[in-house]
Length: 122
Image (cartoon, rainbow, N blue to C red; front, side):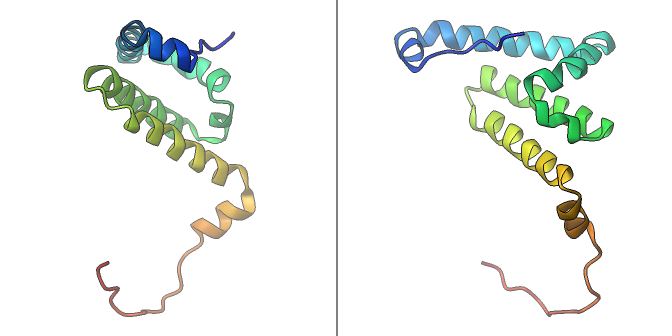
C-alpha cells in the first residue's frame, strides 16, 4: 500500500484541490472510526501507516486513533494543522519510550519520597 503524497509545488499551485482532498480524507476518516467495523479497519491499517504504533498497547492504540481522528477533523474543518502534527509527534514519542525497556523502566519508576519544596511558577 503506498501513501499518497503531495509535493510542495503541487501544494502551492493547487492548494485548493489539496485542501479539498484533505477535507474529504478527514471526513472519511471520521466516518470510518465512528463505527465498529471502520474503527477495526483503521486499527488494522495503522501499523502500515505508522509502523511505530506496534509498541502501543491496545488501549493506547485506540486513544491514538481517536486523537488522530479529532486532529484530522480539526485540520479539515478549522484549518488547524498544528494539532495533527502534535498528535502524531506525541504518540510517536510515546512509542519510542515504550520500545526501549530500559527507558520505560526509568520513566515509570516511582519517584523518591523526598520533598524538594514548592516549585516556583515560571
